[in-house]
Amino acid sequence: MEQFLESKDEQTWYHAKINPVDNTSNNRVDVLVVSRYPILESYRIQGLKYLPYGVDKANSAHLIDLPNSENHLLLVSAHTPCCQSNFYREIELQEIMSFIRDAKSQGGVVDLELNTPIIISGDMNLVGPSHQKDILTEGDLIDNDFYGQDFKPDWDETSFADAKPFSTGFPGVITWYDESSVYSPGRLDYLVYSDYTINLINSYSLFTKLLPEDILQSHNLNFDDAMKASDHLPIVADFTLKQIVGVENDNNILPNNTELHQNYPNPFNPNTTISYSISESDFVQLKVYDMLGREVSKLVNEEQSSGKYKVEFDSSLLTSGIYFYRIVSGNYSAIRKMVILK
Image (cartoon, rainbow, N blue to C red; front, side):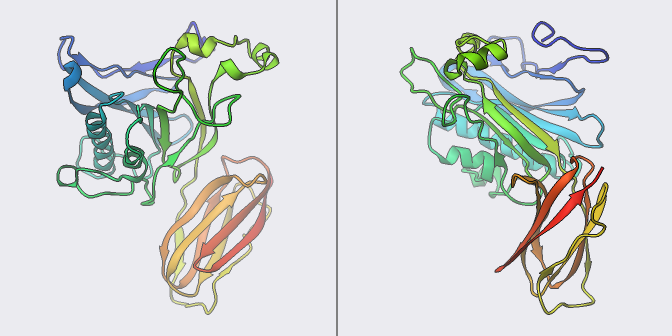
């Protein structure tokens, strides 16, 4: 890693890999995590014995210490069976999601703090039935007798989001390309994440073969670099942490109308209060967007009873500028503007 990305002052690389059960060639753990931030703990996510090749596989999860934050990151690094091994791949995907559910509950192998950011990434080899992706994003388990009931994996009881790393120079998402293979170019490498806790800023798969020459030169690349490095294309995603806020409810006064009020103070730095009223119980969403319409924070995403509510919004991770917040409750929706001034 130092040869590729040399450390600057006070920087270093951290790395972790789960060790095989023993030293036999049939125990293979081929996922490795390298991080600029300290890796606090690593955990084995056991896969089923991969009978066609006699390999006892495993995936891994790693708790990473994030800088300038009280949060840690749970990163799951996975490489599930390829090709026609749908049964074994589904077993490993369910093992991963079972680990996630256990980690979010107290008393398991790992006890995550509430609202810990979660990312699952790796070569998933999802070339089989489409429901295999639903295992990762929706918590749609197949063997409910063994793995329990289906569950929504994010902290707000919604689905995990898909980063969808569109390929450079190509109007679609492919992460695997091999001209000599019987398989067509496709998407094998996935990155799903908790969009309740982190914002996706950018994502792509680096497909140098289709990049214009001037773009290649400006980034010191050659057209075949990605293909020489691997038959898989590198995927990249940038995230920022969301500020998870508390919601104050005054149910002593039941409003006649659903209404979104202007935040106060406005302009503000870094905190402001957004208040709204709900006339009857309904599912409520309150989100913040930037000028380009990108979601930067999800403040409320839950069923709420009739009442008046106040939400404290912390903009510490955002830059100065104009932002919009939007509420949706039943048939009611409204948008208001606010200004961050730093």
